[in-house]
Image (cartoon, rainbow, N blue to C red; front, top):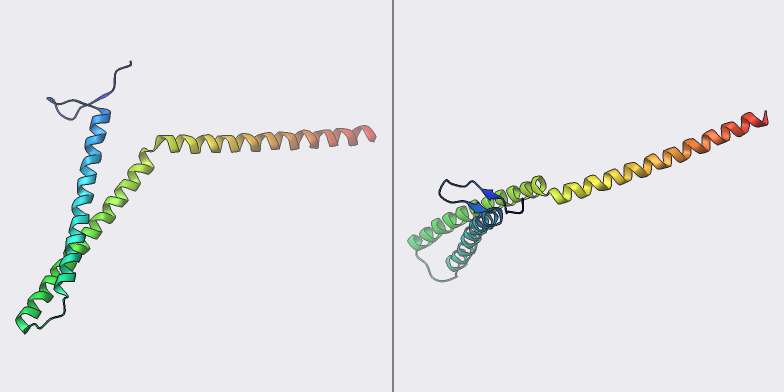
Length: 136
């Protein structure tokens, strides 16, 4: 069983697990890049719009509308990034088997230590009781 596991993405294309995970990682990176580009271009546009110069009412209202639209798209991009962050955290928590196994091992170690301490305490208590019984 030394072969690398294959994923069943489609009937005609079968990828190794590493290739599939690399593809998924690339998709997440693209989503993040798109949202960050939206934030950066929106901020750049807002800075350009906010330049101080002589403007007539039409141009001022037009720039106000542009600023409002840019701010809205930036808010949506930030919300999308927050959603992506939440999804990635959940995937890490659910899928991090090494961390889960390490925590389980730590908890088991702690429980074994507590059991050993309880046994030691019980033995000392029993010895104290038997000593009192012999003295009487």
